[in-house]
Amino acid sequence: MRKPLLATLTAVALGAAVLTGATGTAAAAPNHVSGSTPTGVTAAVDPDTASASLTASSFSGAVALSNCSGSLIRMPNSQATDPGLVMTNGHCLETGFPSAGQVITNQPSTRSFTLLNASAGTAGTLKANKVVYATMTDTDVTLYQLTKTYAQIQQSTGIAPLTLSATHPVQGHAIDVVSGYWKRVYSCSISGFAYRLKEGQWTWKDSVRYTPECQVIGGTSGSPVIDTTTGQVTAINNTINENGESCTLDNPCEVNEQGAVTIHQGTGYAQETYGIPACFTTGNKLNLSAAGCTLAKPTAVSTR
Image 1: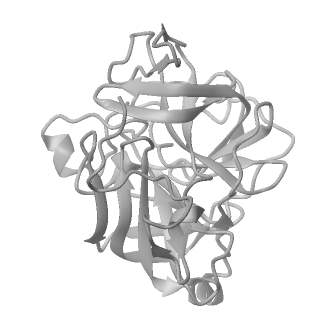
Image 2 (image 1 turned 90 degrees about the horizontal axis):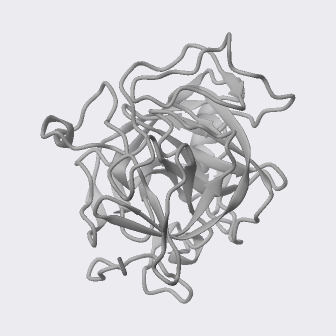
């Protein structure tokens, strides 16, 4: 995990660490990178030394938070008249880290987000009216409900939401990690999946493991992971093992079904999002009791 950004949260003042958040200010121009990049908490990608890729995912629909990245997203069955949703990590929540086993639903929020256009310019500002769902149990996600519908957002900004895929990510598929905070894209592939990924007190299930090219840095927390085959969001970026420690903050470890622990220094991870659409019904309303919904419930304690 990593420390929060320049715009600190209450938890930061208490010394809490935040997964792939960072200190610093957002970069002024977009950059598409592959290969090694700095991994320190205050590190930024140097556009003069980063190797360029031939193609890059559009920044359209990405958002920048005060301390993280995120995206304007829709469920496969969302309608233009539904209230918009912004997705970021659970550890990017403005009120601090949810504890292991904690699930937050329908909590008031007045958070603002900078919405980006295709070239990473500012398309407008989005405002939340509540945290629909937030947790760091089994996954690492926060979903905000916005004050405007998708139609209203598109009318005023020209930006359409990204679509969450309802199918499991595919090993070997090329992906782009699109950071609205840094206005940079990290390109690599899905190396495989971690049965359990443990970091500090938190445990996540069936996490996406990146190939080495995606050396995500501070500020990329909450970035949408785009499957370049479909153009849909297949996961949400959340952490990287920084220095080879085992299961500690900033150093997630993999735990297999037999309980064996494996450490991959320098390897980044994301949390799958294909299970989220089943938990949202007509009107983008959260229903954790809906058929097929496997998100952690407020009273549930995840396996860890």
